[in-house]
Amino acid sequence: MRSKRLSAALLGATTVLMSAGLPTTAGAAPAAAVQGPDFNGDGYADAVVGVARGDVDGKKAAGFLHVLYGGSGGAGTSTASVSQDSPGVPGTSEDNDGFGSSVRTADMDGDGFTDVVVGVSGEDVGSDPVVRDHGAVVVLYGSSSGRFERGRTIAQGAAGSGAGASLAVGDFTQDGAVDVAVGLPHGEFGEVTLRPGPLTEDKPLTSLLRTGFGGTAGQLAAGDFDGNGKTDLAISSYSNDYSRTTLWRWNGSALQEYWKSPATGYDIAAGDFDGNGVDDLALGHCLITAEADRPTGACGPDALAKGGKVRVFYGGGDGGGGAEGFGTRTHTFSQDTAGVAGTAEDADNFGIKLAAGDLTGDGRDDLVAGTPAEAIGTADRAGSATVLTSGPDGLLDASGTARSAAWHQNSTGVPGAAEVNDEFGSALALGDYDGDGDGDVTVGVYNEDSAEYDQNRSTGGVWTLPNGAGAGSKALTARSFGLRGALYYGRILGR
Image (cartoon, rainbow, N blue to C red; front, side, top):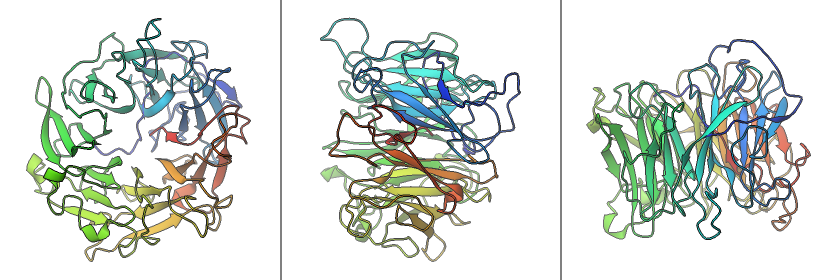
């Protein structure tokens, strides 16, 4: 499915935001759909930061969300924070809950306002101190007031499963209601399961999908990869014994695997990079871990492996939207590819974070690749983000050349200075935060202002790049907002 409105949803919580200059548009109808989540329907996309390691009233790593509302000046025009101690939010902030450990956005109830789905992977259910880390998923519903005043807990995992470590949202069961795919990384086998919609009913997690992922929840993404107009689920995971990316679609009673590859990505992103109306899938920092399953070319040419590479599988390659068409055309690129900014160096981790969206308004999705371990000058792990502009052939042209620009804190127009261990590019999201019709990029810099990972300091920030460029960019840090105990702010961004 073309995702021109970026999606993310918080599972199960009635929430009230503690806001700073929160805009109110009481009684207003939702504005026309914009690219990116729009929680208050004002026509500007909003950004949301999951501060899963953040302290709440002395509770270490209880976690909270920080919302950066969009406006004519871009993201951060006004802000708001919400935790499980906020009025109406289910549960109570407790040590190591990890509220905001994953964040996705979508209009879950069809009222025109974007909602937030929140993973709470460290949530405990019950009072037994030995039975812990069930994990939970919460949905917070957007409204014209800009506040999340409705919500519910929509899923809880079994003890030790860590439910909500990864999430994807879409109508996977094809019944007209939005469903949530939930990763459980610590189960007996590791698995992904579903919480079917509608979310107005108390439905449990349902085993409509059995993956047996060997202890990892995997990276999840929703898209129409076979061109049939229905939402599919992509899962990419790995362990010491194997690696795998699979596509799943509804067969009438369950999700059924219809495509797989031994290649996997540390992050994945779905988008229509060639503009043919069918979604493509990018695997960030592509790798293969299974020795027995290592066919030549599964992650592209080995010559591009230095410093990390991105593998893109294109959808609809047979022209008929069939399953066999997915992945018949591919692109692989690294910082040694013609047109890709920078130079491939060992341990850069190029593309370990990805985000897709239309930055130019041409109807094709572009890709942003984060390289948080990249050295900038003499500053090791200062990090960068590379914007790759798509064309009719996708992310590379017919000659195999990319169009790109890399941005970091030493780039012209970008605030700050590249410093050791900043890790610029440690999270990415896109949305039209300033309402000009083109997409903008938010970049997480979770170690900004860090001092030996001091647990008592607020660290990290989010940089905004209007239209994916340095001009007019802003630095929004935990310290600038006066947030206390906001450890690793910018490590998790909703999308």
